Image (tube, rainbow over all chains, first blue to last red; front, side, top):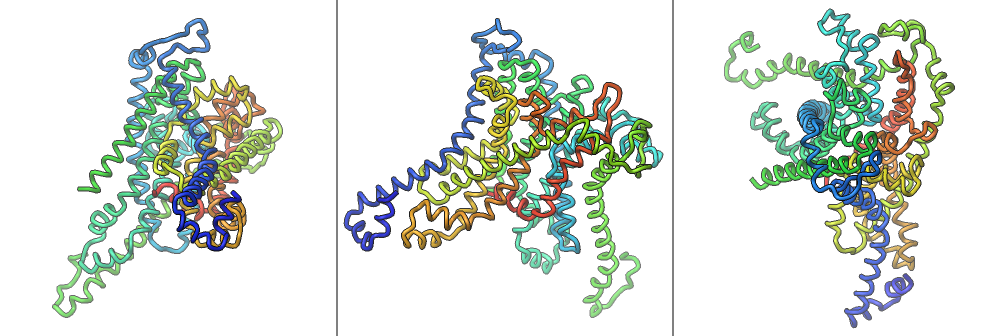
Length: 319
Length: 297
């Protein structure tokens, strides 16, 4: 450190360096690099320890028998754990549920989030307060959204059935969380209520970087509001839309908290999703081999989702 | 609307759109406000519902009916949560874990952010790419291996286990955020300080960090929120009620064999939402800018 300081502050050091370009410059750069590596080391260490290590360990476990409740069964398992994925009547239904939930929730949240972002991008009185109000559901813990909607959907004391009764609508006596499709509806609403604001935040940030004079020009050319939206806003919003979609699709695919709290995968296994199945494999069945196999599958699915989006985005950009 | 518009001659054509647009614009305007109102009600009404449920008396809850207003307002659910259920302990655990995670995050993410924006380390694109991928790593895939590791290290059911795990929520975002924040600080600032004879560490401490404080504050707020929200890790690694975090404790609260006491659950839900709601109200701009700075790069 001292050498570094002297080299820089000594008058005429520039001349010296110019005379011997090799040594002085390299040692400065080397010193700078060493300083940089020291600073970045903790973050890389922590992130490798909590992502790369679990990944490697999961891959290893997935090829071994490792079940805390079957301590006598150890050793190499080959593809037995992966075979179990397709023969145990749990993984495939959970995969179907997860994919269905991801598609529906992301579609709903994107459409509503887009409408919300466009509305909040227009100037009106009290916009700041309205923004804060609609962003609060995103900021509160998932436990809050899950418990809150469990309470809203309670058959006797909940608001949903109260409203249906008051309006003399059908389904007023539904026990929402006891039926497969009604349970999914409740989960979907809880998820959309919390995550639509996130969509809106990202899309709103995307809208705000679109220059206003583009619309001015379109208006002079006589383009209708709808035409402006489809021909100007949507194409210019693509980068933000892509970021929001990648985030939300991956989060939705790994949905856990809401399902655990509202239905625990029930009734039966009809709302079982991959993340919940994986958690149960690890901490209920304590089967780290089978759990490892599910985890590896989840990582692969996540990579595929990210790759598909990035590719779709690239293709559209070059086209 | 077109039918009622009288036929017009050429010179009048200039004002015809204006006249036609009048009522239409008013309709659009009120439609817009209706839409805004729907969004606000959809966002906030559920909170109203849990607040009134938390203020209902035990008799009203036992009656098993619902109403938009409690017949008697009582704070007894809050009192019960804090006395019989000892909800203070989980709140304290959550606060300790969130604050510790926030401090660790801000310090090491600021160091990394500085290294990424101000030093000539090799492989920056690879490092940034890795941090981004880490952000998308399935949380649930960490649970099994970390459970085994913590068991071996004797860290199960302890604060460090949760703090270390929760860094996955905070570190990628905070590092990206601070790297972009540091790169916006003009280089001339630190060059001036170095010419004046300061060492690099002195420059960092006395010049860079004070300028970067707002960015670090944003990273701190986001880190606190993300850790406060954790459920998965607490559920997986905390086994005794005295170590439960608030979100985990809520799930066990108000459950009896025969009935769910929503008044007790909802009182706790209101309590853990308050700090977050306050943060959103007072630091909304910071949170939004931090979130989007982390995601557009």
